[in-house]
Length: 74
Image 1 (tube, one colour):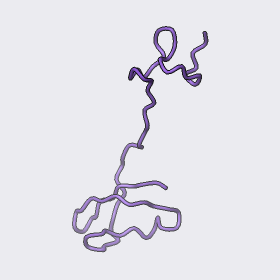
Image 2: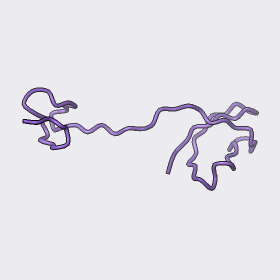
Image 3: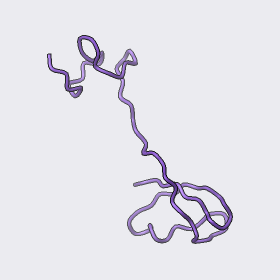
């Protein structure tokens, strides 16, 4: 489920909450219970996949982890 960041326009508190399609219109500030909140722009979370050596690219003779997903042909 998506986790969104919000800022309350009444008290100024910033908070995070899990939002579903059913609860998207019902987000309220946990501090003052105001519905005057705005969603903040934030970057999506990502997961980095690394090999055992900590390398994160396919330079050299191939990825150190031996993964087939890197797209390198050889």
